[in-house]
Length: 292
Length: 292
Image (cartoon, rainbow over all chains, first blue to last red):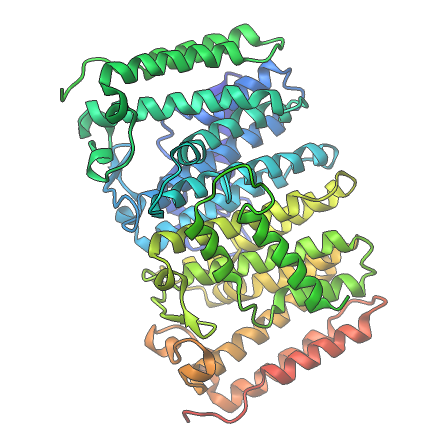
């Protein structure tokens, strides 16, 4: 089964469970159930779970169901963060993935609850592991919460935006890189390997994504992005483009990705994994600047 | 060590960890860190963790650290739900526990992130269990997520308030009773016992709290409650007082609590547990109606 099929299948099952389709004995609030599905579709590139499963495969993937859970848990958290980040109190975004954001399509209360429910569903996904895999699954819970909450996960990253003095390194590391580090580390751990050597690969991919995102925000228009463009300047957010210029940021992106490939720990699937990062590198590097 | 001391100690440790006090190597967003502490203090009655630890003790409490984690996880989730429920999009509450709500004391973005971070901290608390207790801890993750998220946890309960047609039984069961069921079941499970026979006790205590809350909302003023009164009528929420009248609701509350005591499974600490429920019963039954 290819990775995207594994991800789609496991994601559909997780959402169906959260919607109560597996427990027909109790009534379920229908609008919140619908909002959960809305918030995770269309899937987009599913980059974090793809990285997670790729690392798991490179490490032998001896517990594929657990790897799938790790991948889906990451994606559920990522989708939750998008729903909350789009709220009027944060980015006040109208569009995401080319359709109205959850608070516009449903309501603000339902958007808050959708994010909350998706966070919880992520941990429920890991909690559903077989007893035989309990120790590994519990370590996955630990990794996911570390890279998601306070003091250094994506919540912390978003929290930095409420500070008068921002520690830029901590900000980028927690806001963007944390979930990529979680992706590589959880993939390794789900396959029974030590997650520590996988931190650097995740951190570098995360850094590359941040730079690529800054470039896209500066270069593309709203239609190409599927969400409002020019938000970094509009919200006075720090950006690699502002710091290095467009060509400088593109060069920086390529350097980071070379470093990412060099950092891949020795493992059976090392070559395939390097190829995946190269593929992302091509996709990430912006072409045909539309607004400069 | 008495229960409230165990709860305070474990809660302080959990919040210190979320604030980054245990990992001094990385910068932390200070306002969000402060908001986490603000949201869980003053502690109030800490009823859910007290019930959880009481049940664990009644069942032998052979893993006190795990029982403490279960209790604290519950309280973190409860505090998270209060912060999110108080948001302008929901109850738009100005006061909670006699001080300004988190979104007023800090900001709306920080209130959303505080809730998110507390939810994640709850699972991190369980994820920190020893490897030897991994299977039990993972089952605690499963119970906590089931009673917290969708389709039947407290998120679902809140979600019902966005429905045109409300299933009242499902609404109350998920909005209030779910965390009490989690409290009794997680207490039993943390002590190595089957959680299923403990469901009814939690459900009945939860039902009693809902009725007591309805009574307080109808009878007390803002000063006595530490939060706005008369919210059920103001928000057109279903209430036992509306349905049964004040005296009828008090009688109903006492019946539920008798049922709760009768439902306690046979265990070494059965008598003490019955006494605890009787104590709550006295505290819950409103006296001196201020506004009728």
